Image (cartoon, rainbow, N blue to C red):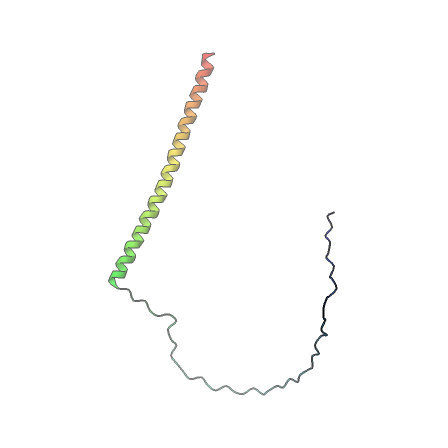
Length: 107
């Protein structure tokens, strides 16, 4: 039941072509020639330089500030939600403990 069954290869159908005959080729080695010296060319810069205008700098600073403010507001609101949830659970625990203690005193 747990042994794998290896599929059997079916017999080929249709026309079967014989394998191609490979004829050996001669390898001719050439004597290495001295390469011609390359002309000295000044290397081109890898990337073009970026020119920032004063308006572009102001836009970048403004958008960066907006991103920081939005992310900060989201993180502070998440922290506040966790703190409020924790405080409400603690108050519920105190009320339940008080109800259980007062129930024991009545009997």
